[in-house]
Image 1: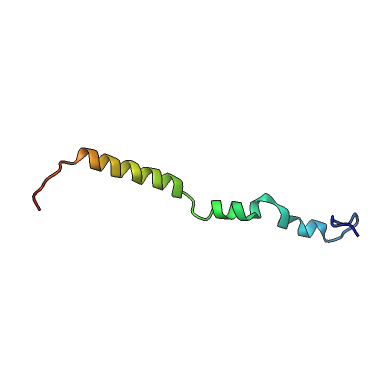
Image 2 (image 1 turned 45 degrees about the vertical axis):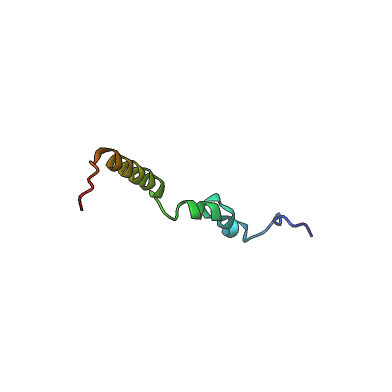
Amino acid sequence: MANGPLPNDPWARREAWRYNAFFSRASNARHMFPGLGIATVAFTIYCGAEYLLTKNSDKH
């Protein structure tokens, strides 16, 4: 018997969702934290601007 799907498999249509790219592990990991990349860039820019624009004071 071949490893591929059977030509007259009645369940093939119901099993097709398992092989869709939307349900792959890489896709799930990528969509787990939406906006994380944009937030990281924005936070980095904010920290850099704060470091450059604030006056250093030795007083506590």
